[in-house]
Length: 314
Image (tube, rainbow, N blue to C red; front, side, top):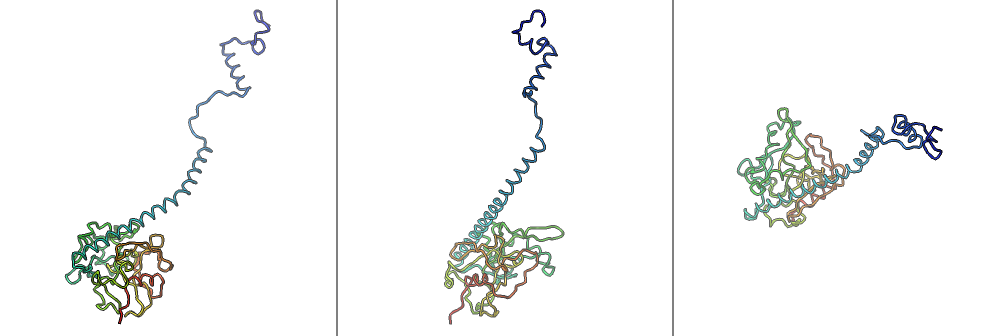
């Protein structure tokens, strides 16, 4: 014990270093370490393990949320497609109202180009994979064939060419080395004032609104979302049993199935609905090759044919 220190002085038990000296500060640090009290340290970044944990959590959340977001987007596209058809159906009504109840014409590739071939829409859609249709390539991207359109067009009532195309239709055509989106995905029931088959092949053709009796307006369809590989002119045809074609209900044109295996359809009473197809043959994948009809009975075709027209009564 040094002179001047007492037994009660705690410093005499642990250290002979003077308070405030370098030795005493080192001693205090050593004591903190010994008794488990570490001095605070600044952390500049996450550790690798922490980063991996965060990434794993984000991946799990993405796996849970992305399918839901995809379904929400698909549902929104279906709603927009139905809304487009409602606007087309309204234009169809307005045209008939201004034409003394006569329905818009529904012609083939000549539609709207000359008098006598009046049609609700003009233009022939195709792909560059069909070189025989080369002269029609520009028509796949020409919105002027929709609005204002040609002779007999409903474009003066629709105003916007955007409503002629389903938002889920991503079809395109390559012209001069560049890819361009096509402008239409909608077609009209061939029995709605079509120029073909003056007698309807034994089935009723509807020339005026008042002609739509069998099937009734709430069951007779007018517009449909057509398949990308099938659409060309503005009319849509389903083979009818007992007609001049002599085949069972079969697809001659193919409806769209891009909305979760179904299509949007507008009816003569003004309502629109979504129809989910049941036959896998109807839900054909897009191949960007012209669709070639397979004449075979199809329950989906039978469903639509019943809503297209009815056999004339003797």
